[in-house]
Every structure is written in C-alpha cells, then in structure tokens.
Image (tube, rainbow, N blue to C red; front, side, top):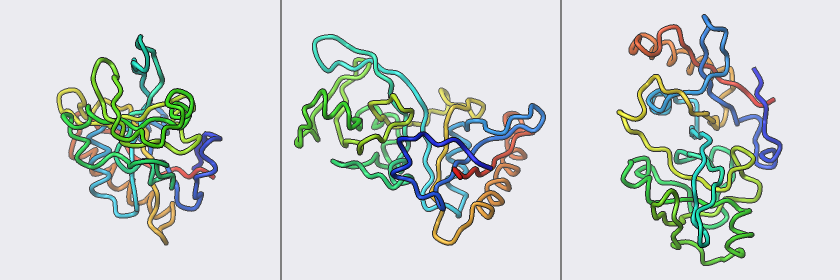
Length: 219
C-alpha cells in the first residue's frame, strides 16, 4: 500500500520507517479513513512496532497578531508529530504528553517557520511570548522547521486534546503517522495494527463493527 506524500516533507522523510496508519471499511469499500481520538490512543498504547506514533488534523483559527484577528490554517497535533518525521522544532520543543489534557492543551502553541520569519522577524527570543488564538492566550513553546506544514497551508500547531464528550469513538478526523522501530518492516507493523483493529471492532461494536486498520507506506 502506498500513500501520497506532500512534497514539502520529502526532506525530512525516512522512507523505510515513516508510515501512515489508516482506517478501513470493507462494506463501504473505504481504504483510507481517518481515525477517532479514542482509537488512536488505543493503537498508540497497544502497538509495539512504532518508535513514535502521532496524530494530526487540519483546522482554522483566528489569530490576533496585530490590531485585528486574522484567519489562518492550523494543525491539531499530538505529542511526537515532529519526531515521527525526524523534524524537531528549530527553537523550543514539541508538545508534552500532559498537554493532551484539555486544560493544558489550550495554553500552548508552536508557530510555523514562515510566520516566525514574516510576522515575528525571525525573533530568536520568541519562546515564552504569547499570542491570542480564538480569543484565548497561548504561550509560544516552539518554532517549526522550514517547510514543515501539515497541510501545506498551515502556519500554526496546537495540541490535540481528548474530551470523551466532544470526541466520541465514532468521530473520525485524525490522520495518524508513525515511525517504525529499527528492524520492523511495514508488513510486520501492518499485521500488528490489523489485529488491533479487529480487537477494537469486537470491543466497541457500536462504533467499530466492520471497521479495520492498516499500515500504509509512502513509497
């Protein structure tokens, strides 16, 4: 199985180890479904094939960088997304595991390289400064490396957080990317992930019956 790769990420890729994890629905002939937050968390906890497993999703937000709010494309990101692609922030850090908690997720942000250059004049002391997103103050904890944008138009990264009321198992909107452990093949990872998907279908039939999971390579 192969998946399309955004051109701007090729500089960061390890094509032997970078993969995607996708949902499937045989009855509806769907082979590249997004995943829900609960399913992602279960796979991340159970799977042993991955050095890192992370999730992301597209969104939009209003940022106040001057006098008036402006709308930007942004990315919901789980901890480890930059590490999955071998592309650590050029300043600061990735999101921390405890920043998946809603109370902490709403307080931090990683800014894209383009915005850092164009709107913050490549300020090397930007860490710790605050910006306002959708009316809420967030602290800048990192600056993304050049051209690291998911999707291609995104200029900010904010943490994915899990709320059992807001994010039921049936709400599927996450793309999931993984970095295989050394020596693990995509075929081995696929077998493990498919087994986890089958187990989740039995454990949560109301939401997952008939659904599965697969591992997809980029080449």
